[in-house]
Image (tube, rainbow, N blue to C red; front, side):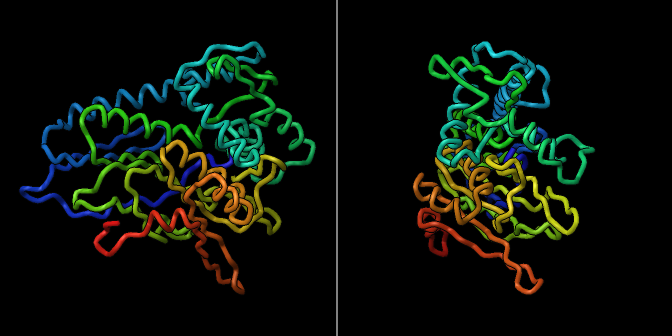
Amino acid sequence: MNATHQFFFFFLFFCAACSGEPAVIKLNGETMGTSYNIVVVDHNRALKQEVLHDAVEATLRDVNARFSNWDQNSEVSRFNRRHMTDPIAVSADFTEVMSIANIVHEASEGQFDVTLAPLVELWGFGAPGGTLEPPGDDAIAKAMARTGQQVVLASTNGGRRLRKTVPSASIYLAAIAKGYGIDKVAGRLKSMGASHYMVEIGGDLLTAGANPNGAPWRIGVERPDAAMRTVEDVVYVSGLGMATSGDYRLYFEYDGERYSHIIDATTGRPVTHATASVTVLAESAALADAWATALLALGSERGMPIAEKNEIAALFIDRRDDNGDIQFHHIQNERFARLQAYDTTGRP
């Protein structure tokens, strides 16, 4: 779909806890085809690492059982295999994810779209071994007949029943499921008494409270340059979800043209604008995840007015060619700038 991969250079800037300082619990592992990293700051030293780890793993197993496109027994995989148009009942979690997806789809002029897998695969960005050359117009039109979130899917009964209007349609949730999983893990941590934490999966994250130094969490955003991995900017995050989407890792060149994996849902072709990455801060990781994808597909020129209208804090990084020298230009809206208005101690 629009951004099947989230690219995000992840750093935590804080000192190790010293004697008398809060306990710092770190958890990490593998999930959703990527890794997770969690930091919990325990001022009361009442939380047990093993207990938190088991709770996190159980939560992530449940999320994967709902939304993993790689697990043939997951809820979404079973739905995709049904080449039928009769409605079926879906879980409360599935209903919630699709509700968020529909909201962002509509608000983004259709650019966030969970049904774009046929186009992603057609352009060679799906399973390994794809053909890295532009497909023909007929092939694009055929793939587009199976896409369109509001066209090929329909829901009833308050979203608790979902059906296909095109039997071969499919749902691919890579650009929202990680964020939703983060929200679920954060909710589990909160229910267990944690109030200061950072939960990150595959570059998307959500924070609460303060880092071990008592300051907002500081996260590094990667420079959108495939030739190097370095920090382009540092973002303060406290009580918010954060996600970055970029176009600079998955692309191919053909006859001198560059084709990225970011597909324009209205044309069925890779976008051609100058935006290389978008970072979003939102009230949940699921919203940040979805909006980062949508705004990257839109690009800064179209995307910034939409971000403003929907009160989304966004940082666009555009690629500019200055006589062969690529420069990166930052464009942030007022809402994003306001959330970054910290003094040198990291306090608002």
